[in-house]
Amino acid sequence: MRHEETTYHIYAKDKCLYWNLNQEDFDEKWELLQVMVGLLKTDYTERDLSYIKLAPKIGVGGPGKVIVKAPMWEEDSYWHIHSNQV
Image (cartoon, rainbow, N blue to C red; front, top):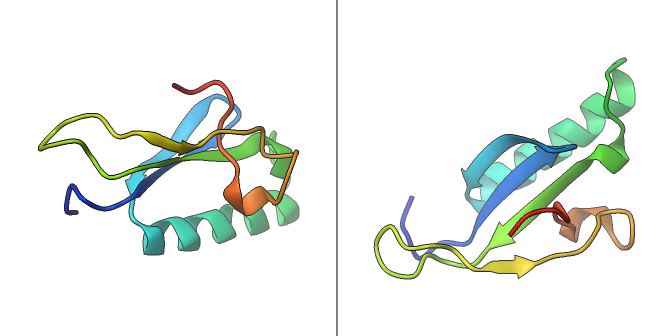
């Protein structure tokens, strides 16, 4: 992954399931997780799923800037993040 790409971290409650995903991997995993919690008997619901979207890294190995920050149940679930991050 190039450091100028936007990346995503996906959470279930307070547990990070996937980190540093590019857009394509994020789209695939986000859709799969939403289907899984809807169909399988788990301790999670769709409201427990969230993510953060990070701007490209600042320099090599530098921190990413959080682009979006809001509880996932307030708007379209595709564009929400984990509210306890950052």
